[in-house]
Amino acid sequence: MKTSRFSFDLPEGLIAQEPAAEREAARLLVLDRVSGRMEHSAVRDLCRWIEPGTLVVLNDTRVRKARLIGESASGGRVELLLLDRRDDGCWNALTGGLRRRDFGKPLRFAEGVAAALVGAEGDARVVRFEPPVDEAYLERRGHVPLPPYIRRADTGADAERYQTVFARQTGSAAAPTAGLHFTRRLLAELESRGVRIAYVTLHVGLGTFLPIRSEDIEGHVMHEEAYTIPAAVKAEVEAAKAEGRKVQAVGTTVVRALESAWDGQCLREGEGRTRLFITPGYRFNVVDRLFTNFHTPGSSLLVLVSAFAGLDRILEAYRQAAEQKYRFFSYGDAMLIR
Image: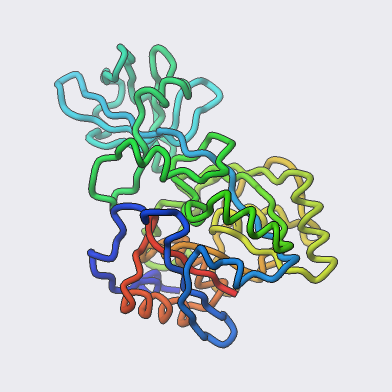
């Protein structure tokens, strides 16, 4: 299937550069994936669209301040996006302002930290820091890893708004953006109406945000991401399935975690790693409904939601959303696919 089919026209002015004034203030496009019917609502009215007994599953990963800005030995600006820390103390990272010939050359960062590129793993580079960089250092000196289509520097406000209110497990290089719309008030209202809430963890990395570069989607290879399914979530999912209640994923990362943990008969608890690439024709075993943001053209995320609702339905929904001036991408509005 051609990657070009997963494309759409979008005026640049609809790419959200700032979050909504309040998390719940985002607009909500509700799509019936069987009939194709669309209705316009708001995130604050989400309870209207979710039946009591539904199991809503969210991703509780926490975004680290993963962008480091420093300089090369010649004084040029360099930028690293740290993805994950390796067992040897080095980090896998994406690099800006550096080329392969810069391997081994010294880089300088705040507080006297030195670094060097010491290897490569696919799209990532292996970086060694001296002294080693830890989470405390990143909290002090790192920047919020806003995506490149947000064309501004991060601010103090992003440290709060590019993080879900339920974030607990540090490890992501990007936010699970569907979860950004939820507030403690909204979660409490859902629970008060009989909706069940559960949390899994998937640390967002290249598997989620790297674009598809192959001409056909079949040529795309997903990068591995780590996830965790708590025992309580396994029990919640299996009870929902046994009782005929819906499982609603909040975000594509939750979809991939739940579907990756399905062993054909039940959900596996514990830690795992996934390269699952969900494409049209995939049979969903766990997820019945999906709350998600609007995704970038040619991304594995757009392919996933197209697998869930049908490519034509999704492209028409995106067309109507653009016509109605919805805000797109990480800080934009949301969809509920039923």
